[in-house]
Image (cartoon, rainbow over all chains, first blue to last red; front, side, top):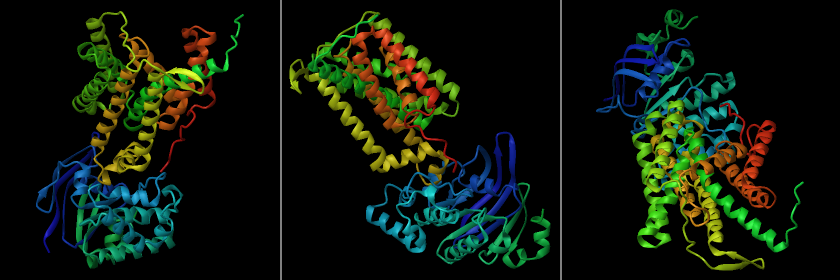
Length: 236
Length: 295
């Protein structure tokens, strides 16, 4: 496996406040990697920094063989990275189909565009049934499916998932985890940030622990499954 | 007491058509202003000066060539290019600073207005109608050029409506206007969308200026007169609502046309602004303003 994403010495800031401190991590092709930590530790900021959705950052982010540290967000996305934000951020006034269509570049030919959208509907039948329904009328679980579908419709090489189970009812979490299981076995790399380490461990190859903006531990899923690791880094 | 003049059916049709043509000019100005505000959040005080440049540009080309249509095309193209340069080189960098945006566009508007006053003086200029003949409309003889203005306004309304609701660009404009950072993570080049929208809005102001030149006289502060009315239209219509701009522009056009029957123009303007203020007290978001969306 070759290295797909490399983050080196990343520091991130919101205004004058520094949120990430010298973060380094890497992810190989077809790798599924988790970053775990309590609320407010910098998980979302880490993903936002990777796609330059932040006030200011220093350090280097390399994707493939290109330094994307200074690229604008849309340029990074067009390079083959898809981002599912924590709050889903679907457009409530647009239909399910329009939300999906928006994620596809205008350069994608119409027939390919239609195939991609139909593939998502094949994967998420509930979205297919509600293709003409406005995004704002979907349930929380359906909105999460739409957010994931909107990322998948671009057929990305790297998928960034920000707390995919956050705020969902337990029964819906089961559905979302099932969807994630089908994603991680595919031919793509995935970087997941989550608090819910127990639900994510079966999905990941390895992971990092983040605390107050710093990577403080890392290991494979077996290592991260230890209860003392959870108590040390995740228990409030 | 004022005596309300009795009007004949023929006069009624003439006034209604006058109101429609005036309303379409106001709509062209207001829709551009509304697009820019709705997407970028920029209160563009230079918008009126773009209308003035469109009108004076048309006048200059007519003086040189005698051809109104050439003047219209050249002035709209040149003012649109000026809008492009302003957006790229200046305004783009201050979008995150609303106060700077306000002061910047106000300053640009003042400079353009003063430049026009220095070059042309304060006297007004008139342009001959390129379509001097009249045609019969509902049994009334009516100037062809004013019908042409109504037609252009209607085509622009249909065109922009289709652009916003039926095209990929419209989808990207909607996404950028509603949540720019989300549009970015979906691969939308929002800086490009900002530029296109600003340039489109500027072009509409220039078109309004060029079209109005044969109807009203041109004077350096003409842009100010139109932009105050356009601001009223977008507030009453609902901030950022294209449909609201169209409906309220047409209503205002009719009030002006029929109001002049009984009141001096200044009093008609005062009446319109007073009515708008009362309306906003009862419906602060305007006719088509949407409540805040909590995603």
